[in-house]
Image (cartoon, rainbow, N blue to C red; front, side):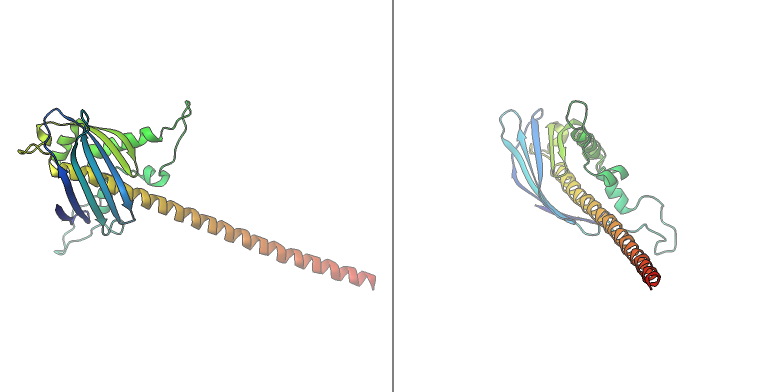
Length: 245
């Protein structure tokens, strides 16, 4: 079990490997990672690696990811010594970039677009985004090197499935998979789940505010028209009474 706190990205990670079996170079593993429970700041993810040839479980890992101050980070100004710090993306922006989220992803979310065959291109877009996400995950050269033989076969906000051909770089001296590589794959699913929930919540809040504003404007116009109509009706009634007298 490994517990670590990443101060740069404000991520608290509790990683647990419950089953670890030796593997061999050339084995093809099928990975399935599912986010079992997700909130706006915490996620529980479980991943299972099985050998494709016989279905034997090689690694079973679970992770609890807590994002402490995810979207509340502010750009850095002057440091404590009065010198300007290096200008660049904030910690939050770096984390969003690591999670493969573009501005279009955050605004459009999981909208599906139908193609000519009656299917959707959303799945292909998710796969492409997940592959790019894995390719540039973090700045760890070791992980990028290990991810060369990783092929994403399914990508959804709460699920990631992939196929991996093991090489010497994936195994330690005992013949088991490197824990850091496994943990990073699980971490991707946790981060994507939280990001997806945040985008969904923010989109719902935005729609609610827009609808509330439109309802308020409509009610204001209705009251204005009723008041104006009542005034015109009252004037016509008085003129009619005066004409009769």
